[in-house]
Length: 210
Ligand SMILES: *[C@@H]1O[C@H](CO)[C@@H](O)[C@H](O)[C@H]1NC(C)=O
Ligand SMILES: *[C@@H]1O[C@H](CO)[C@@H](O)[C@H](O)[C@H]1NC(C)=O
Ligand SMILES: *[C@@H]1O[C@H](CO)[C@@H](O)[C@H](O)[C@H]1NC(C)=O
Ligand SMILES: *[C@@H]1O[C@H](CO)[C@@H](O)[C@H](O)[C@H]1NC(C)=O
Image (cartoon, rainbow, N blue to C red; front, side, top):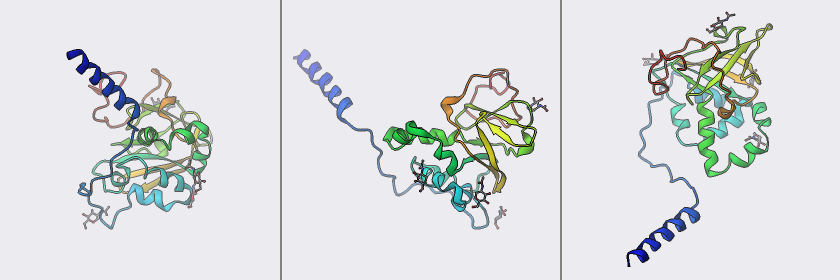
């Protein structure tokens, strides 16, 4: 009898694991919405106002939470690297086949976090001619390099084409390629650009790898 029960349990679990499709529940209607005073320009206001960020504007609405989080007056400062429509033209088959799947939504959320630097406003004057690194909200690093003509390259592929756009509490740089979290190469020797500690990213900001 015990064996029989176990078999039922095992087959029951296997049945669930193989046949239940990954999906998302509808957003509850009573979610807290942070205040959005009329006298501010939120990150979302900026993204939605730029013709060449129309892909990003649509993509932000796919993973949960970003529309609300980007449409408030944060009490912290931030830097956001906004991939332009040109950036999304260079994403390829992996992006187009994966991003639209349920698991792809989670991946897109992580991708967006990788473009956001909380607690620090980095303008182009903060980047210089040494290959340096900055930690993002994904906890991973991106690298930055300002070339002789003053252009800033991120991860050696993306160029800041629209620098230093001011929004309330933050600065937005438009870039021409997306920053993929999985492309981070471990570069322990890169100097780290001075930035405010990202809570939860490390046990101690004094550790060399933080
Ligand atoms: C917006 O208005 C509020 C209330 O009048 C004020 O406290 C706040 O500083 C203003 N914010 C900005 C960014 O001007
Ligand atoms: C970007 O927008 C264009 C025009 O609406 C659309 O054809 C294209 O599929 C979009 N790209 C992505 C990656 O969403
Ligand atoms: C994006 O489009 C805006 C106008 O909507 C323009 O002012 C800006 O230069 C463009 N930026 C880039 C990086 O192409
Ligand atoms: C560039 O910035 C990094 C990080 O702040 C610093 O370590 C490095 O010395 C700077 N390089 C130059 C050429 O100023």
